[in-house]
Length: 547
Ligand code: N01
Image (cartoon, rainbow, N blue to C red; front, side):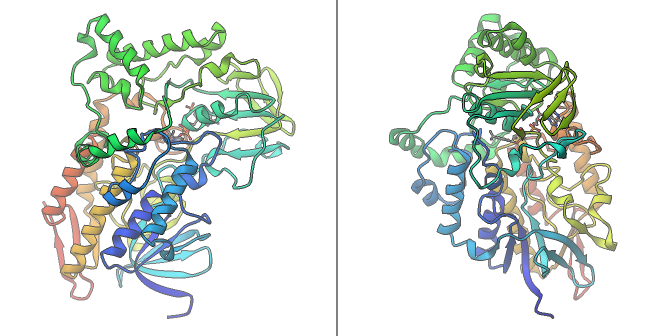
């Protein structure tokens, strides 16, 4: 073997929440591992998303690792929804506390991954020109990590500063005295807009689709608050593991259609006042499955928007229509709607006045030129499958992953895709992924993967592949579940609808985190039902659950 090639048990991609936990779990289980990270530091999503106002929208108690009670006890969060900077500090602490850095090669991109069928090894080539041979390939590269650029003529001709929220520079960006345009009003746009209003000369928001923004009610945490949560933390985590969204939030089973107007008004007022991401969805069991039930929430929030935004013509543009509440991820924000009462903020409704082109001085809409010094693209991501399809992955018979996924990504259980043995996806297509608490989902995936690799090592197997018929049936199940909901009515990134040319297939499993966890456990207990396990040396093959 030449000096440029090394061999390990597993290659991990990424040093964010998923990558760090994969490094810890697999190393502790005795596997030799190598992780590659494109950035020059720890943090993954939070490393790249240092845009103004960036913070998580799940409470810190839930959006954090649960694997170590000691870590849980010693880390003091400062706010209910920590900033990207605080999350980075937390992840850096985790990396140092568990001595994970030594396994990570920074500033290194994985370019290609090719499966060697004769030896059941992945041959992984990286941007430093080196090759790593690995039995297992674990891309933990995130579900929202490939920024989607805007698709307008002349984008490159703009002479001012231009940034994507998902690739925020590490150097300081100055806003004072500048005319800034923000394109996009999803979670990233909403946070950026709130943070920049009043901090620059003029802010112009280019809105294609108005979103539902519910109050964040972020606040600083006191010692008493932290102590209170710690008292019941173990139980909170246990409950989270069996719930639909991976957090301990009770979901009502009542129908909104059977509620009296007074009851409903009280519940919705309470959800607005004591807000959190799931607040409205907790109120009734049919909000995500029945149009009329959903409209009661949508209507309530539209009423709030009208009451906050002083100019009726601006309020009108901000009213979300055309998709049910919750089918695009709702955003959290405390000042979002009131920002539009400022004289130094302008809202451009792109449905009425579309962008025609970019020019050196700014953006030309159907109403003329808007001069800008800076443009911020909050235009989202090629979600779920994007990070994996950016790598040139070739499986059995040299088949490209991009060819296999040309009509939509397919996996069995969101864990393996047939024809690409020993490649484990983490919170990817076919898993609850972003529709549940990501940190809880990540731990569940990595635990399952580690147990599976350990089982294979103990039994002498060196290859695992998903059986195509199980994969088909799993993905069919994913589609069957979503058809019973309202999610297909929105052009969301869950559906790939935000990326021109991407097949429109709903990728997350909507059956719930708890149900999914149980299914994964039962598959493992049944000897990895639906997977084929084999040994290259003896050519022994075991097909679990073959029909
Ligand atoms: O991206 P998005 P995001 N011209 O895809 C618009 C997580 N997250 O980065 O709706 C004009 O949601 C697009 O318009 P439309 C969270 O899961 C979490 O904001 O497609 N506009 C939309 O308004 C979130 O859901 C946190 O019509 C264009 C926006 O850009 C996910 O990441 C913070 C356009 C994109 O919204 C993604 O959020 C941030 C174009 N050509 C992110 N192309 C927290 O935890 C796109 N748009 C708080």
